[in-house]
Image (cartoon, rainbow, N blue to C red; front, top):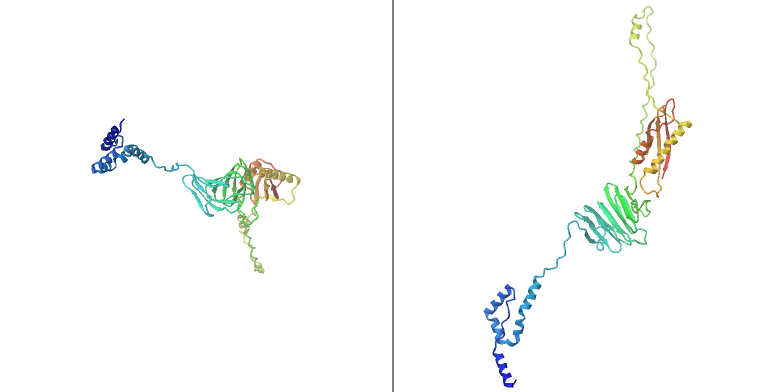
Length: 379
């Protein structure tokens, strides 16, 4: 091709208008905006002043506008809302001592990273009592708490205080439920926990150990509710001293000539002296019971000891001892009239004793008897 032909082609290109942008593929809103700008002459001015510099960019306008539109159409990322009934998570690290944690309509889980996590059932309430040192202390005020404690070489790293009880662990899974008053229930799914009364001083009160799979009820840290306080019998009031007898007055002398009235014997017969009433028979107390009574008493004590071992709740590894006074009332034919314990034993133990003694026949005696014995029960 000659240089003249090349110059002619360049001249033709300089005088040619750049191609109009292809707007057919644009969204309707962008097409409308493009037409509005064209009508105002903005695009015509740009095309005349710098046609050769801007027409490739205008040719790419449909693709750029489409990409911008797609980006704006992308929905924003919104954190997924918690589904109803899902567990609400809470970081326990920033919680200050005394912080109250509530679980209203769904469980709430508190995580202390590397130490323990605990979860409140719906309707429960607890406080972070202390997190100083290596020990986390939680005070359960209402409802139920599930805890999972990381194993540790320390003796106790997680303690739940509830209604006068302490539940202490160093690596386990367990649940504590506050039922009513000082009555709680502890269930262990892994490891070992110890339940004991809350102690105010440095010395710890003896407690009950529960292993995995065990469940037990406690009252202020004890496996049985505390007996009601003994009420001292009222002090009898000494009788008032009797007044001294009046000096006897001599009876007036009857005239010797006056005979006794004839009606006196008849009046005495019509009004006899009242007979003395016979008191009801009460079995007499036996200070030194005979051998037959002693054998019967020993049989009753063995039944009581057996019920104490079988019916007393709590871990069998913990030694428990109780002292009480047994009073038996026995009919002449050997039928057991009454069996009283002072102070009372646990309700479950006394029910067992009543069932064991219902058909027991003791030693006979002419008058019946009542016998007391101080006994010490051990498990």
